Amino acid sequence: MAIPRSDALVFFGATGDLAYKKIFPALLAMTRDGQLELPIIGVAHSDWNLRQFRQRARNSVMQAAKDSGEKFDKAAFDRLSARLQYVDGDYKDPATFARLKQALGNAKRPLHYLAIPPSLFGTVVQGLEQAGCAEHARVVVEKPFGHDLASARQLNQTLRSVFPDDAIFRIDHFLGKEAIMNILYFRFANSFLEPIWNRNNVASVEVTLSEKFGVEGRGSFYDGAGCLRDVIQNHLLQIVALLAMEPPAYQGFGAVHAEKAKVFQAMRPLQPDDLVRGQYRGYRSEPGVAKGSDVETFCALRLFIDSWRWGGVPWYLRSGKCLPETVAEIVVELKPPPQKLFDDAAQKAGRANYLRFRLSPNTAVALAARVKRAGKEFVGDQRELTLVEEQTGQESPYQRLLGDAMAGDGALFTREEAVEAAWVVVEPVLRNHHPAIPYRRGSWGPTQAAALIAADGGWHNPVVEEGRP
Image 1: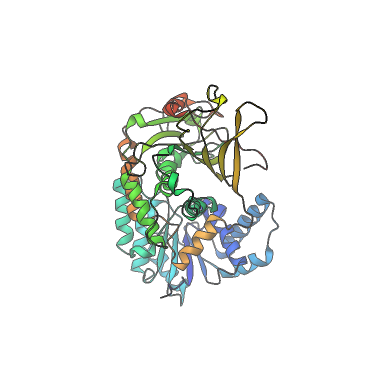
Image 2: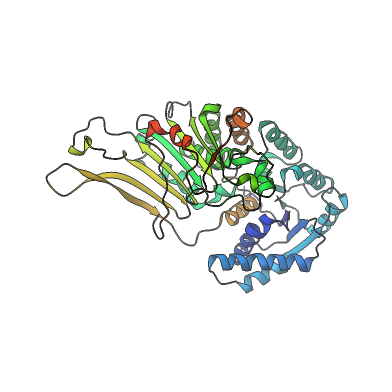
């Protein structure tokens, strides 16, 4: 039985920063590709009218075209603009939702996208229900999915009080990236990987997501979240789940979600000594940041998954702002051969073989192996064999995820049980932790982060070179 598509798109927070930077460009791409032939209704409390709203959309897509070096597609924008409607009003006012109901007209299966702070989710969800806008509808909510375990459970309860589970889509744009999807494909489409993808052959796994920039005017938001909540608990733990999960029992997103949830449930809850928190120098002077703030802008941790496959293998995760590169990368380091047979074994021959996934800013999958140098001596060098490089013409994460939500496809979205299980992992250190350690802008964080992984040879620091993955 085919799942019916949504027949209208409503997005709350339509005049906000997320809509400007991500949603309007995604809507234009979907319009250009023929994926969005339905009413699009923006809702916000900004005292705007439809003309201003359409101008905001135009400014957004023109800026996106400029940033990407592409030509502004006026014909596609004209089609998008003709579909745009706007409802202005307070989310606490039932009249706002009455006007929304009127704007929906004959639409029977709208998709409501809540691009608003989580504190407003409950208000909007109740308003949708009371106005009759929630029946047969779907809802998309942006991360963060709670501030801790208790608030995540409360959020899920609020959503489920109005919408059934299969109509709730928790969007994490990171999961919509082509490179993230390729992790799942690469793992289970290649038979050579399974025999070595376990504690017997893997020495350690590193995941790095670094940014060269600081909080960029978002100090007030960031000071209430921090790196552990904003990046580690969602983006990086989701990556770990894809790398560590068992093969799904069947082709379908339900099987993938079930196996990912098992990984979270097998993770050993973090303790203070598993974590190094850092704060770049000057953070406390950022607008919106509390005087004397101890919020971390850098976080490195050591994690264990107490499962049959991964028992004893350390997983090292780190993320931070004002680091040397803006890059996301995974390194799966394999154990060295059991016997040192060759001449360079007595030298510092470097690391053992590893598999490297570059996720951004470019994408690649590469395998590192040692190759003998020419000559009589048995001495070699480590070389990378690049298996997959970046492909052009990819959908943006928001284009892909919005299209999937309208189709009722939950494969790339986060499920309730996984969200709560991930909070269980970090819950012990949300408040009980060591103080944040100052670090220099442009460094790889506090030196204590290097000590965390010293037993496994130190961090692989990603290098971003123009034209090379």
